Amino acid sequence: MKWRSHISIGKAIADRLELPPGERKAFLDGLVEPDRHKERIGSQRRSYRVGHHHPSHRTFMLHVWIARRSFLRNDRYQGYRHLGMALHYLQDRSTSKGLLGLTHSRREEALAKLDVPERAIVLGMQGAVSSPRFVSRSLALTKPLKDPREVMVQASFRSAAVAAAVVDLERPRGLRQRYQALHRRHSLILLPAAIASLAIGLSLSAAMASPVPLVLSAGVSLGAIVLDRPYVHLSRLVEWYGLKGR
Ligand SMILES: [Zn+2]
Image (cartoon, helix red, strand yellow):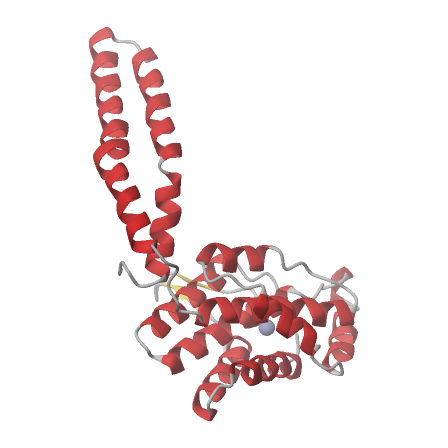
């Protein structure tokens, strides 16, 4: 996607969020940053370039989490900068590359001439849910499209939804209590059950020189892990609201 398209979607979102000039600038800078210098992730010795039109889910979520943590500690510049970078990847993903990229540049030209559909921005924001699951799902639902108008609607809608989700810090009621209850279940019952059954299976298998007890106990442990999934989801949500820091 061309800079102009990234920027015009960004401006429409910034207008809706009524961003003050400094934060608006940080957001728009973030939106074009990934094209400015190809981003590298990983350590210095072993880094790899982030492919632009195949943005990994991981890179997107990485920026989303940095943005979210920045907002939680009230560092709004950093928050908007990384939110912009995350949205860049989402918007690029919206554009189909076409066969061998031949039609790609023509499509991007056409796209750059379109206005941002205000309705898509409004609807995207209205439907947003502030959670990491919603944000991750929004990216997964963003498909490469061919028709420039459809690309514009999708990119605007999903970008607005993700932006609204990441900036909304209002904590759902009772989140802490729900987490504490599940945490108790996790640490007092499910985790010990998973470990104990594996330990028993392992010692029986050793005593009987047979893998059967271990296999059976692994099944029990797996069951405990499955039962524990609501806890895993909720602990991520708790982190999203800054109730549990990393
Ligand atoms: Zn790009």
